[in-house]
Image (cartoon, rainbow, N blue to C red; front, side, top):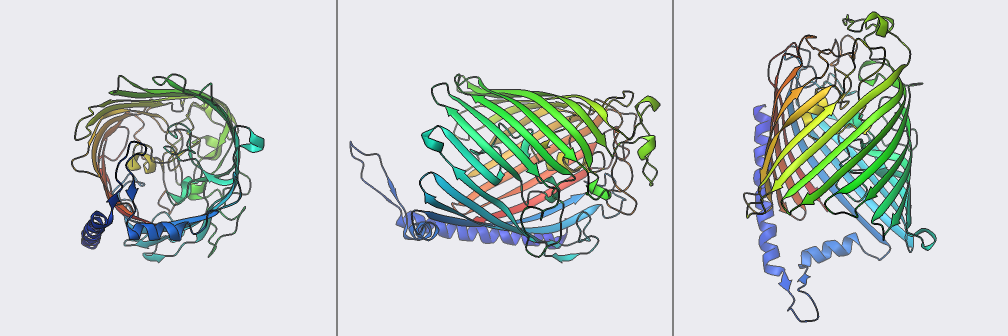
Length: 521
């Protein structure tokens, strides 16, 4: 990391500590506790500052709004190129993402929700994966409406909620579906700037049966300005192809120790009118996914989740290393002659992911976990397509390196041909702080990569940099420090290393570092 970057992060964190301490002192002086009575629980009175903020954000009963600012510095080396000698292998930049949102409730149970976002970047080194490439300096990018929907709750006095429009499906929130393994981010090309899906969602609740039924329809366009206009238009691609989909998701919580989710997902990819260059290589596909998830808390200490899915359908992948789609930069053909085609192939793929956690329930909130995941890879000797497709799950579920290192092998976040397993440990050394460590051993079920992306002269140029004679992807290590300074201020320091194995040509370590501060109003 550059000296300039280190200095900025240290100064930012130091300033944050000072501000947070001042806020803490202010709160301790002004927060009052109402006397407890037999008829009412203890209540906290907001400080004058917090009360003023609350009144500003919710001036009338039918209107509320809020905003946040996320500042990130990210540094990585060889993460996308998989080769330290490649063009612009080292990247160092700041990301400034600002968002403002509002919700209007014109009548009871009906709300209109909107959010506007922008992410300005300052490239400390020549940019490698943006339309601003290969320049350094300030990249203003564009403003985007990343949420705009109408929600109707208790439709016709029935236990039915309907949300239509641009909306999020983040895991860990009321709008999430399971752990977000296959549904979480509809805009993988812009990183974590946005993650919406243009969709209509119908949620029916069977309260006595502890069951919810979700029916979702999706129409996601690759270009960011098809449905809604942008500010300072730059015509970004949010995903590689136009996508349509349908989801049926049933969740039952009748047994606390064994919550069950079952689902059917259909995804249609259409490559027409989409630029086929560099990282935007699209595909045509009809993917059908049937899966289920079981999770729960056993004996107050053991927490687990197991999810698996099978996929069938057909796909035409322009990244396929076949004789009819050979790349001009000289990618080797790894498919058997019987498997080489420029047309559609039948899908026959599967995936399984699981995690077991022991909760110590002690003062430091110690937690030990063990994770395991298997995503099938494409067999180069088969005419079928065995590569598992994570659908709308292309977000950093377990690792930033795991997400971006697939840029040359498939696409960013298109994880497949993967076996990973290993332990994790997290604890809270002080109040509002969380420190975690993880190790993963990474393998590839197939020792060759049947896809490759890019064209000459780009960060994505060349083949997947795989050796074609090894199954060990490498040793992965992660350390993350998170701290909540106050109700309005939080931050983290994130570090990852991958020591590549014989699956890759290059064996030099791959690194990722990030410092972040988030201000919320």
